[in-house]
Length: 461
Figure 1 (cartoon, rainbow, N blue to C red):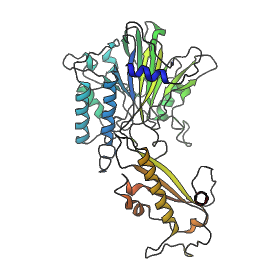
Figure 2 (figure 1 turned 90 degrees about the vertical axis):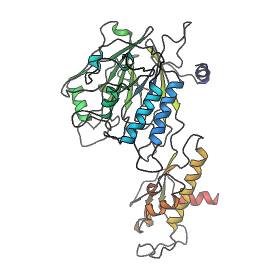
Figure 3 (figure 1 turned 45 degrees about the horizontal axis):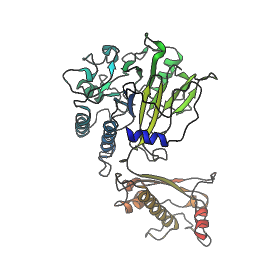
Figure 4 (figure 1 turned 180 degrees about the horizontal axis):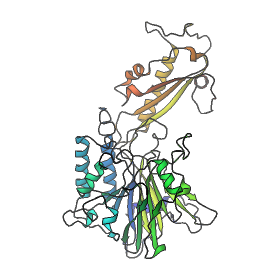
């Protein structure tokens, strides 16, 4: 805790709003931390992703273990997950086994849980046979409680069950935000108290965006707020939905507009989006001061697609709540696999270079300039990954190079990306998927796109 205080003193100050609930630092009182509720937030862990790929087999498990290690090291009161703990609704026996091992190792202990559970557990967990939160079960020694909603990957299916239901019944996690009636959503909060701090935790597990939009628009969703001390609660909402517009063909846009979210919430944990936003974003619903809420988009702990958004630093977040104020601090994950995403645009020919008139590559594997350019670019990306790799990160990086054939190059048969990528199978984790190719006609070039003309200029400097 002393190390945390030193780090907080070194952070630059943020200009606060009037009546702001987000603080740069939560002050400790003379009685210590008894009023500060500490929450570790993570989302989209996707255990089991890449398990059939030899290089990626344990990446998701290693990230999940790091999340739990951080929770223990930071001595948090609880872990809050935003959905998609697993990558598949019916994960392999191996992945289930490994997750249960980790939950038993890090979550079961004699450590005291200083959280009073004030709500009716039979309502919060009405999907369960057991009417209590796991750390109040006398038959289980839970020292680190985990609360989670379900995501679209570990969504309900068949008889309405997910692997998260199994873990809940075993007393290893607390699954909330699950609804059997999709025509009327009555969202009852989990009510927690630590000292004088009270937290109302609302959750809505993954729903079809269209359905949830209609529920908000039609007022068939109700948030049941605590009656006692109406304004004394710090209100958190956990979601797992599309945040930006994802469809131009649907009237709802296949996303959940932030304007639908009631303004009594102080903090919204937004799961499903894999891009990590390292700072809470304020959403103002009107011109009134303080009339709005903060959104935390934690992102995923593992990359499941080869995009620039997924290549950003992965984080978990330490949330400290005291009264109606909170502090949010990103904690960088150290075990995620390095990823470099780039692109090459073949848009012009160097002087004196001609392409085959018939547009076909030499059948005997003869030299073509694009192959050399792509090969050099991959070497550059590998060097970049090696220079940025941390001591706990896997050695082999993930690469994605998008190659665009434009201008005079558009008439040439593209390179076989898989074949070229396999030359690097001992140096990258995803050799067969490194290169993707696209052919276009006229294209609008931005200043930050890598092209042959830029490369030629750079070599002459």
